Amino acid sequence: MEDSLLADAASDGSAGEPMRCPQCGSLGPFYHDGMRPLADGSCTQRWLCRGCGLRFSQPRPPQKSLYCHINTANTIVSNRQVCDLLTEESKNLIATESKTVAGEESRTQQEAKGKIVEFAWKLKREGISESTISHYTRLLRQLHDKGANLSAPDTVKDVIASQESWSNNSKSLVCAAYQKFALLNGISWTPPRYRITRKIPFIPLESEIDQLIASCGKKTSTTLQLLKETGMRIGESVRLKWTDIDSEHNTIALNDTEKNGKPRLFKISTRLAGMLNNLPKNKERVFGRSSIAPAESCLCYQRKETAARLQNPRLLQITFHTLRHWKATMEYHKTKDILRVKELLGHRSLNNTLIYTQLIDCESDDYHSATAKTPEEAKQLVETGFEYVCDVEDVKLFRKRK
Image 1: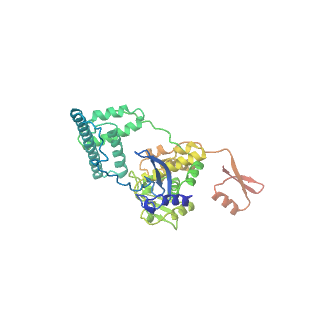
Image 2: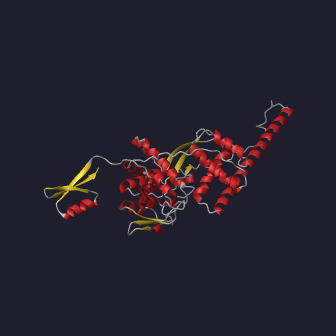
Image 3: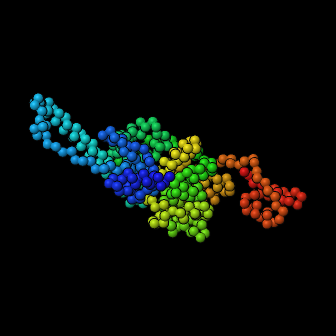
């Protein structure tokens, strides 16, 4: 299938040249991403780069310049009438006023963008993490796009209160972002009160996670398998370097953490080690990305296709952060040791760990049974997860939940 996509993409370039991704420069393969309508009524093919997740349009051949003179004998119409000068002046006045209003709106947008960029630089000077800066600036842009004047706190309150589709948790996050903006810019701001409610996170089945991993591309499936086994954040996986992986002992050292988390050392499976080794090693970072946006875009596209093909809408609720909740919950169920889960997630406070672990009953009443007659057989059963039950006629009985 990849060869056919690559052939299609190569044949759609202009002047017989192969089509390349504008962001990463790769020759494909590319996914078909629908058609994009154009102003002239035609449509152009949309593509999704499988390497970096960028969506772009099919390149169009250059249009011929349609230039002609209007003062030739063939273009002069004999029955033309002279336009009313007053009407023409009125039209010109309206056009001028429209341009003036558009110019003022453009100037206001530029000023707002400048304030947001300046705010991001102030956060960076204070040592705030890149993920927090990106999150705050995105929320401020949403406020501005919905009509809020960032220099007028009352308009910000009005915009937040009028958003019926936002939950109280979302409104609280927006208020926190603007409160930081007001503090750094000397703006008097009394934030409204929105009560934050904790919701039980979605915990998928392991079979559903494995189905999603099997249906995704090389990079996305490797990322999902990595998060499933380690429980690290998606931002931490993006920062992962090849020097952090010990292929001989199948371990990964996480030193570049997010949210002031503790460094961790993970033991990975042979399957994950093989998936990592199959990735290209032409860049310093394992996944060759500098942000999480391309990874989230690829996951969204491939998750939607998998959910439709398997007729399982629960797959649409699986995100990269869902696997962190799943890993914490399964680890606590397995060990019943909350401190071990705290060290696994890299938390410095136990209160943060309690948010991730869900007290769910994952046990089944069905068991696998096995017997052992020699110490070697009993040792093998214990290593594979079986627990001793009793002795019956010189035979040791073991069981393991299904």
